[in-house]
Image (cartoon, rainbow, N blue to C red; front, side):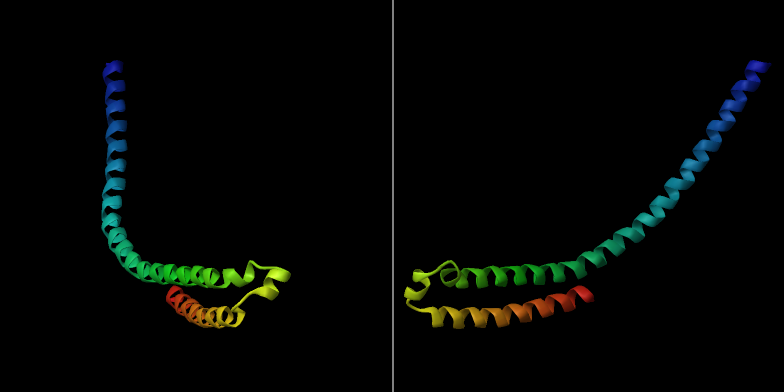
Amino acid sequence: ITVASANLDQLKKKVMLSKREYAKKEEAEKNAHIEIRERKVADAILSEAAAKVEATEAAGKELEDVALPLTSLQGAELDAFATPLSVLEAAERLQASTKENITQTRAALKE
């Protein structure tokens, strides 16, 4: 009789554990639908911001590439550079567009 009673107690414990686990799984499944929906909305918002960040990074890289001929020179080489004004003007134009990209990116990230 004690063996049967012990087996019955163990079975009751297993049933209680299973009920708790089932309740947890059920709650997780309810939340999973909500999380998936929220993740889709967040991904849509972040994809727009990510595109702007990439555009800003590309503009910054382009600015570096345009200014590289002038910024890499020193001393006599800098004095002998043939077209410093045209490089400077191109760099200033790119800097203005890069600043605009940065402003748009910040605005998108704040949203």
